[in-house]
Image (tube, rainbow, N blue to C red; front, side, top):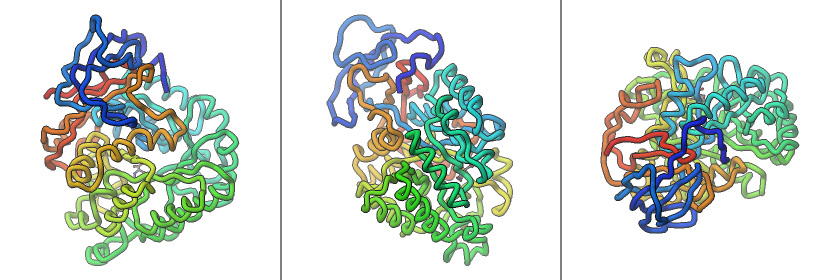
Length: 435
Ligand code: DOR
């Protein structure tokens, strides 16, 4: 994960984070000065001169978060997001590394695009970018992309996310190829023939509102297929954005059999329900859709029980004009990477439903395990990717202040705690917010 080119030729000042409470996967280490040098953690309570001193009193210092699932819309859809805005938004959310999805225009199915994304992102020096590449050429679900060449160019994951792979034989071949190369396949598990034109969860609310529904079974059936093919081929398959109780139960069933599957949940599926559609604002139109309160309760329980491996934001920016269309024509997806931690800290940890350590695990070690990366800690010698979290100050979500180009949010105005104050990547400040 260490990347000496990150941030280009900018100098890396020897930095001290004064008086932070240090928390990582090894535990709560209490209050110390954390020293960073040369892009790595140097150690705690060291002496000597600091070129940069950050007052971290009252803040928690912990490894910057990892996100296996973001849409940065580059190349080709830069009116929605670009690398500079998306990676700045990620850093503002406390993320030091994100995996970008391949459903761009052109699709990331060409090694040259992968290499270009990685090089452009490294020069920015914001959050680190690890590109995913497409499972099928052009996301058409017909021919496999060249995973060996894509991996050689820097792709860390294979996925047609946004578009389900309909052809089960193609999914099998993709899994066999990815397994040979040790690449993770991420699924978008929805059966399009059952989903039809559904724009929201199919149930009492969709019937009442008269909007086309997308049943939970469209998800659970496809998760079953995807997990069965994972088991059959031995490929590492990561089930993205599980939204329903039935879908999660299928993942659990396969995990109990030792199938090589992992899964993620999103901030929105953990905090919002289909009742939000009563406002008829397609800001909450996402795929898979927001489900019922019972589904949310089940997902939260699966998080607590350790069935859920990690969080994936599925940060999916669109223009305001696109999201202002009606419920049928607005695109699926919402921006959330800048509020993911405060939202979950407030709604789950402060509400007494989840330990802080478990939430951090979902954003750090859990993602690393899914991706086959080293677990991030604050140990000396590890990359200096660190976030300083303010767990005390309450502030309202203000989409106008988002660094993402998508300046709208279903959580607008919500008073949250847990705001990232500073994010350092490779020992340099990638984001800071005044106290
Ligand atoms: O809501 C979503 N938006 N779900 C996806 O899977 C794709 C994403 C997008 O690309 O906008």
